[in-house]
Image 1 (cartoon, rainbow, N blue to C red):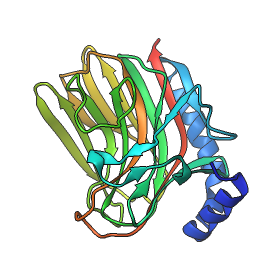
Image 2 (cartoon, rainbow, N blue to C red; image 1 turned 90 degrees about the vertical axis):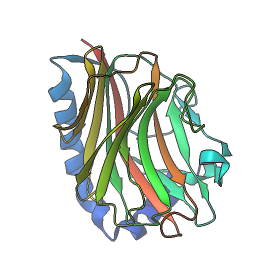
Image 3 (cartoon, one colour; image 1 turned 180 degrees about the vertical axis):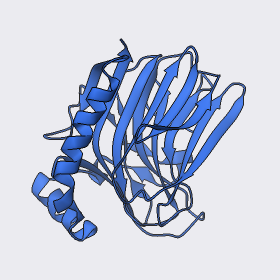
Length: 243
């Protein structure tokens, strides 16, 4: 893990001054997220990335990349200005990590900002069976990608995928992901619902039936989309249990 100072300098260079505008907006979003979920959900886990990645809370990937392509390295994670950065290099050395806390039913939220970058990199926020999203197919057959960006260097087309034993369901939305957005998913016995900034954009009657962990990944797909680097920035991640 690099120093917070180095990460902050890198972030400033990337964002061309955008970080200076983010502090108040992030604080407001944190307050809104908590207030909006209190009536139905109970906060059980969170990370605001203000200090360090606790190894008791996070499983940081140090392994071959998605489908064995490239590599996921802890060196590609940075903390700075109260956010977590995932960086993917042009040679496929990238980052990923999973929360060690898992549960079957609940609500998961992440506040994320992306940067224009290589289309060959897919930023993903997902729920994966306990242990992290290191493989391609989960043993249980269930995977919920509540944000994925595919072959989109401008970061304008968001996708939601729910893979389950009955098949794959999906939704898409047009939005500027280079600004902050809150992506959320709920998994209950009634089904799976996805949200962007509190607005529903996905709904399924199917649901995951095994404990899931939230994961953050910047996955490399060489030969698909433009080559080059990519960045993913995460302000916070929260996990709620039914209240």
